[in-house]
Amino acid sequence: MEKEEKHAHLRYKFVVSGAAETGHCGMGTLEKAMELGKQIVIQDAILITGATTGFPLWSAMGAKKAHGVSIGMSPAASEKEHIEIYKLPVDYMDLIIYTGFGYPGRDLLLTRSADAVFIGCGRIGTIHEFTIAFEDGKPIGILEGDWATDDIIKDILEKAHRPNSKIIFDSDPKRLVERVKELVKKDKIEQFQIIDEKVKNGQV
Image (cartoon, rainbow, N blue to C red; front, side, top):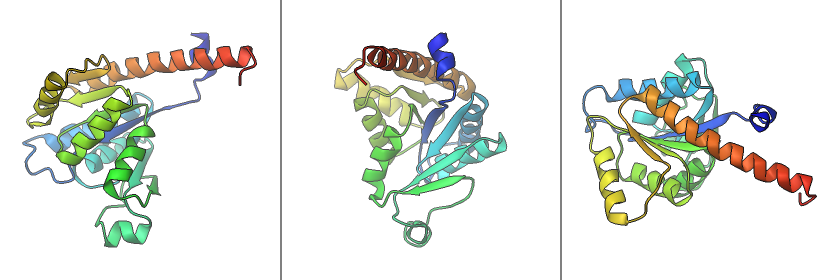
């Protein structure tokens, strides 16, 4: 508890990953995306997205409706390229970081900037972000819904033969954020204990 209070100023950063085009996702998808973004803010975290349309944009809308902070990580090198070449929005984000690395490089920076990654309805880009987060050992929340993404990920996990205790599946955005937040909290406390021990021993 003491370690948690000492580092309480460090707010959690949660990424929401999902499809830029949501026509295949089914009814109620955008509402679930908005609720996910809203719950991230309500539970005192900052939202980060890939600064794109569709599922991530609606999560950003939910975050702003809850008066939270929304950060976008763009594949473009500038605002001009972001708007004119990539045709991406600038709405519902307090800050956009222009990586200039295209989608693959952006995905790496996006997931590594986060304490946890949430996966909604998505396509190959979303699966790419999932696999990066998986390899980096990030806590991952998979939002279940009327789409195939959660089942695809379950299939990948079953065939990969790589057990992972940091992946949570849930159909309720509020409950999913709560459960993932507990994983992040545990990770943070362990990290702070290691850092404090190194400082105490003069190693840092």
